[in-house]
Image (cartoon, rainbow, N blue to C red):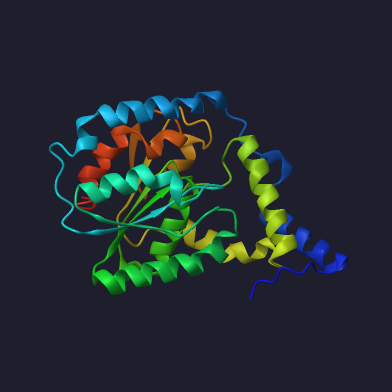
Length: 265
């Protein structure tokens, strides 16, 4: 059980060393490839304005959701509120969307899987149906591993700007946040980063359910190449990383995929 009491200094030092063994080395602190300026992430507001004027947002020519359940999982350092627009849209067109119950996505991924699994089980109990998982950024990484652990409960995974190929191939500022989150977990919850080893193995494993990665080459947070894998369906859109939760292109893809998951031919 997690505890809020601070451990002795010697134990704390051991956890920090273990965390350093799991995190990338300093030479991989963020990517060295040319990256779009992070200020371009401010485009998300324009993407939202385009969305609310787009016919897909009104549900025009969008297949009805037929009360199918969908679990929405937010990204790193984000909460359920960041996917509220998507939640409301899915509800309007006939799906049964559910939020992950996250106020601040910062804990170790392996630790976060337990409440996410409980939520998935509860949705399945209520609906007696397999659940589609839609995750933004880190949320898509969590969704992929959740589907690996419980493929019998999951209809499909749709990842939005998620580094399914390499979860550490992100902007240097984001990577600095990852290191800070690891320190936070090591100090406060007495978990070192070795708890993530199983999670990383399951992330690398071949998907057990239909999985789609939606990515943008002008993503200013995640290296778009990290969103690609030979065993995952990939669809390119244009826009910012933050705006993938508000991008009308993404909504059209969701309208197409949610009724019938992608299957490799």
